Length: 199
Image (tube, rainbow, N blue to C red):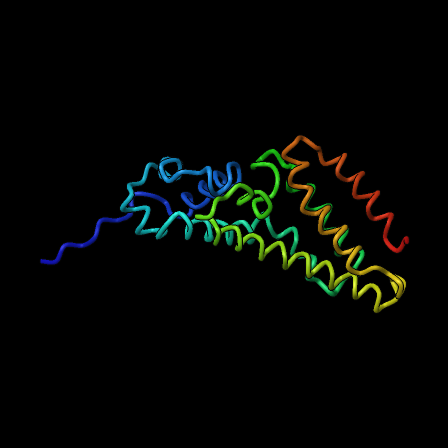
């Protein structure tokens, strides 16, 4: 009689949630396989590789989980049903709220997750860079749309304005990790949004 495989001794989703928290807190490079296996329920190396393939593949799965949960705060940048100004402002405010929430690690996984990777983490670096680049292009699209509909003057420096908002969005992560609170970040957002349309 054929032997049936042993059932998994861990909850895969719970393990993935735990890995997300650890990667978010420490980043990809400093997080070791031993730390991951321990926080994911003390699973064996065999179970880990059978379930996730590798540390890199696990991280890619974690990034998708993050983007479908807390990371959805940037989705509004891709919404053309609201005004360009509202899309950018709501993204900044939602990001500030999420990234200062003490119920999970501070900051943004997409910004800090691969900030100190060596050459072995090149794929991880490129993965996160590509997501940030998409957000940057979405901001540019909203600024261009604002010019097209007359919300911003034709003389607007589209590249400069895009870089300003994109840099601010990325910078929220470092500010949150350094202790900036939501109220202070909201006041900063008041200031940056006051520049909308000014030259």
